[in-house]
Image (cartoon, rainbow, N blue to C red; front, top):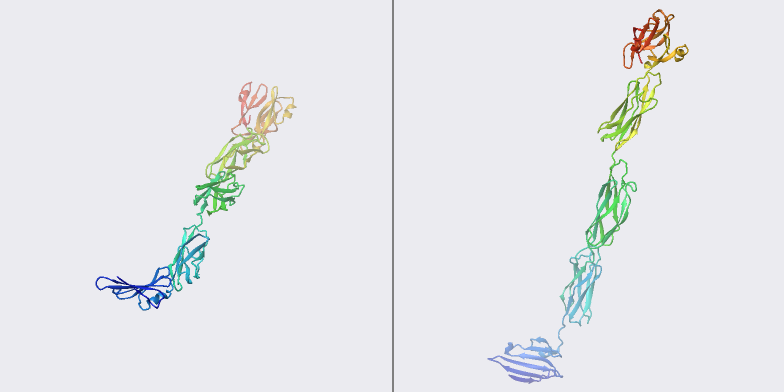
Length: 541
């Protein structure tokens, strides 16, 4: 290897050339150039080993090679000339923030920091979409000489949607001269700050009146947090306090609880009415709580049965006939219904005017009328019409007695009225009269009511005449001529034929005493020397 030192007048310095021989014909010559301070400026390499192309390697003041020039001409001059401008390198980083905050992207400049540098930027949607999630932005970021860091800020939106974290990008483009974008895209992560809500829903309820309505409030969604809501009853067709007890308050869920109940007391009234309803309404949910169904309907089922209404009417009958009282059922005719009944005296008195009676009148489903019958007595008293009553009481369940008393009028039958015939005696004669005072004032002794005759004549009857034979005394005849003796009027009327409650009226004659005996007792007349003369008719004893 040969080393040569060449002094080049073109440079202030020392040039040392080394010549090295290699195998075969390959040769290389290197020349070193230093400045006045002894610092290496350039190394020129030439020879066949470099394909006869000279290369100059330039060094900076610190001895670092900074250029390589493949041009032999002016090689040293080229090293003395300043190097071409180096580039500025731009890189954008990522950013993250909780929604509602500001994303801050840092753009870093490296490389040549002495020149000015700039690039355009713009936001680009990802899972985050402007303007709902952030405010779109674009512009230019610029570096002055010496600046190495700049920021781009992007505002985000604080929504209320529970969602995953979302992303967008800020992209650098269109760099200025001598500027290279090494990393063009920065990812901005928007972190969700919304808590999944607890969802409250109230259901419906129903109960028979008098019971308790139980409304179930169900919590879904986020069951880990505490949750609450206010509640209050609201009238519908059911109105407080007549149909239910109004209520309000707060229903609260602890962590993990998913079900709560609100109870409302109802009133068991007696009104027959349709089913009624009211509501329980949720409101004012706590933080992170949503009411998905705010109103629950409470149905109060009527338990009252429409009543059967019983009313008894009046009745009329002639004495001896049957009073028929009709009990009418109105209203609810589908249910069974009954009531007790009993006769009550008025001017008609049992048992002389009617037969007392009591019992139960019953209606099966669908029946609307029933009758109660009362037998009357055909007496012989001359009297006015008389009255008694049949009274209903003790109705069965769901039965109302709307008219509880029926008046029974017993019409007096004048034709059946009888009058007593008083018997007086003065030996050996008998005296019959319709007037007690007449007999008592005649010197005779009163014995008894001998019998009773009809006061009024009617078909099937005959007159009983009181006759006087001046020699033998009084007797009774059915002949108006009194069998040729003196007629003193009638003693009433007798039936021509036997009938219930009537007995024969016998006539006897005693020859020895020349007297008549009129009696209803045949045995009385058949003894004592009397002879039977026949039946005058039929009378009451």
